Image (tube, rainbow, N blue to C red):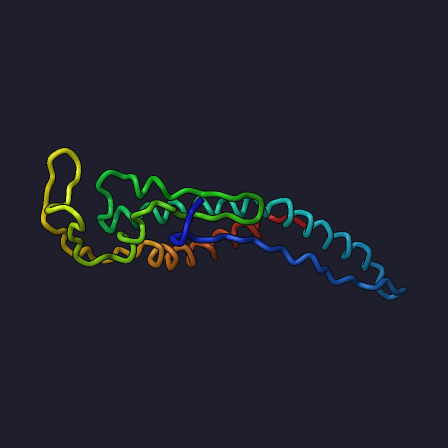
Amino acid sequence: MPGTYEHIIQVEIDDQLPTIPSTPLVDIAPLINETLEHILHQLNYKATGLTNELALTSQQLQQAVITSLGAVRTGRLRDSVTVTGGGLTAHIGTSLFYASYVHDGRGHVYPRSQKYLHWGDNIYVKEAGPVAARPWIDISSDMLEGAIDIIVENYLSSISF
């Protein structure tokens, strides 16, 4: 389950339709009401697809930004960006333990109980220097805002009357 470093997509459809009252002068009121019901049904029917498309776009943007910021050594962080949830809500992000160090950066790291820090088979160092922040969520959020408009516009244009 993604943790702090995530986008949350939630699609909400307002199902409160206005009702046109039928009067002798307004013969088409039943047709208008029926058309509004039809449109609402299509909106609700397609809303899960919209959520899925927005979630996939978010995932692709996050992965692309992680790569473009040079935050890929093994690909584990990039590949850990996943989509969870379903229906009208999706969480897109990572719960990888070191995501915060990549996203927010970190200061120097020194060994606590040993003389050296140790990585891999034969990597020993007395300290690990600071790492600059690579805020992929912030950058991909800005990119996602622009994509949302286009995706929602396409979604709405697919609704037929």
